Image (tube, rainbow, N blue to C red; front, side, top):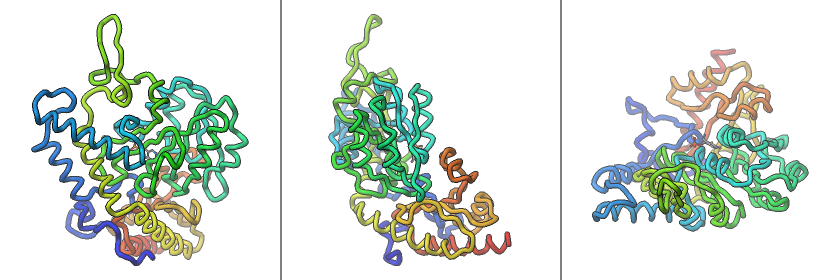
Length: 395
Ligand code: PMP
């Protein structure tokens, strides 16, 4: 039950207190997660005592840094049961999706869903794909029965969120992969919200591309990853040019390094990659099954408590993962967020970078509470106290 101890000790997270040392009820982990001390230490080491560039130095410090950077690649790849030569470090999930949208050689139709984050919509539009939109079920899942009817041999790509950042709904990813493959399309999963909360193994899912952001996985900002099948990456031309991504450069002709280096132009986010690997260790030491069960219990409890409020609207399915979006009667989500802030409770209010989903729900925005390993019942209690006060103010 949600009354069990948190799997991640709040004391390990320096960000979990207010400036005047009070508990901060941080319920915005779906936007970005707080970082445990070991991740901060790893970043500080890599920028301090350990610091040097990678891939070019002939001196030992640089050689050690290069080994560490490549070890980080192996670690992040292993996190999703992938091999290191299929794992590209990017600036985040946004860049990972842009990379595929721009570099995938057969730009045709892409099937997205109504609940996608803007970063899984706009890159496809910008790169010139024809976008089709899969509808949602009544309770806010991507409707795979509808997807099955919509998919045609003209579709080159299906790109879906593995877990919705607004509704918390979890995609039946293996079925989505089968559906995509049945018409010869590839499946890209936006794993931003799944990677920190679910065991994710790309070989079991059978997808073709997987995008992640470290900062939602208790790691730093500025780094993320794209996993792609080797045969597909090899067919993809580079999308940014510069140092480190080449084989041979002359003014007449330049040839490129094989993947993943082909897609990593310039000096990479070295310390961030180190800390990303440390964040993967942090998650796996706790165990993703444990984190999933913990967040499911918190969601169940919060949905139950919110459900007792007269006129409340709860979005997303009963079995949502880690995330609860809701609307209080007669209260704008921004007003709720502002009042909660006075009580040291942080929620997100707005469209959550999902304007097409807001249009579908018929609201300008929602209030969203989202959990992490450090969340517990005290956070829910503080949220409910703040909601109570808000409802009295607006009554
Ligand atoms: N997709 C989803 C589902 C997200 O929640 C987010 C972050 N809000 C993104 C993509 C974009 O991630 P980033 O900004 O870290 O690249």
